[in-house]
Image (tube, rainbow, N blue to C red; front, side):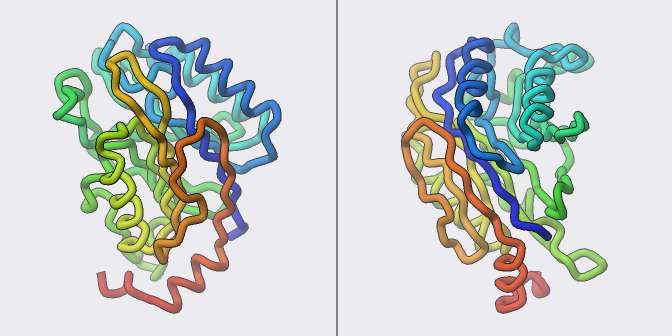
Length: 256
């Protein structure tokens, strides 16, 4: 398992303006270091919205096409979510794009009822763990984070943990940011995995304010990237050696 470099882009998303968000991402990456994986906030090219007219037709998704081209150009994987219409239903759909153009999808399982998301979007049913460069990555979107049962890490038949990194992309508002901070750290400690959360900054079209706090945490609850409020790209390095050594030192997963 090689070390994995992951870029967390804490983006000030432009409300319902796909082209502006594309341009901001391209500009940021024009001077970025080489990374293995890029994280972008939830509903990366619209902001978190229930305006279904903004949804991409899944069969001809401009957002997915943009991500594929970006992934190929920079030879990196990308994980984010977008609003998608598929067979007459709407989804908050996570997309994990590989540099060779392959795509794995994850439909958000817990719709945010307080914000009305459950009235517009169909929920997914399945946990999705993808493999990339020797790592197993568990995909989540925002509100999923409140439900630890969704991602309980367990040993498989060979005695290895089901996943190594939990990825959560979000539009998590400032007024509940203390919850985000606490839940991310809890998921890392209880599942003995890295946890990376990518949130947005700025203000959306519903006048909700976001102050970021994107972060990366190791299995002991230590910060690789501490919560911060600045727009921009930060890169962290996840160490396979440190992860495996920590799990051997504290073999808690065998008791799960």
